[in-house]
Length: 83
Image (tube, rainbow, N blue to C red; front, side):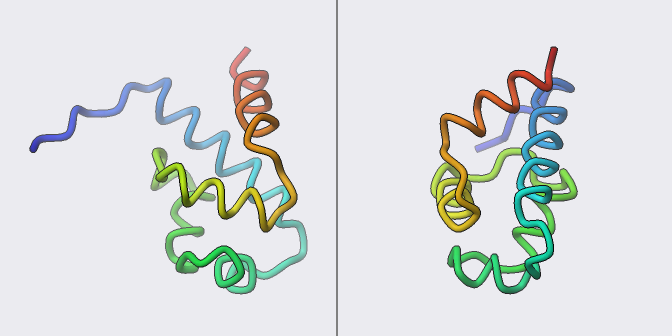
């Protein structure tokens, strides 16, 4: 199966998601947050830097839970930043 290339908008949304997660992480270490969410630190690093602009739903949900964010809030904040 060949994956369709991401649009510039999809890449930008992924970058915004990464920025929001990074800001929510604050002073907590990437390793600690990733471990608590059950993902690798490298996965979190890729999301935060925009190199993984379309992480899976369950990865985002796990990170949101650990960081005290609601999925609705993440969606709204990504959409608001797009304006």
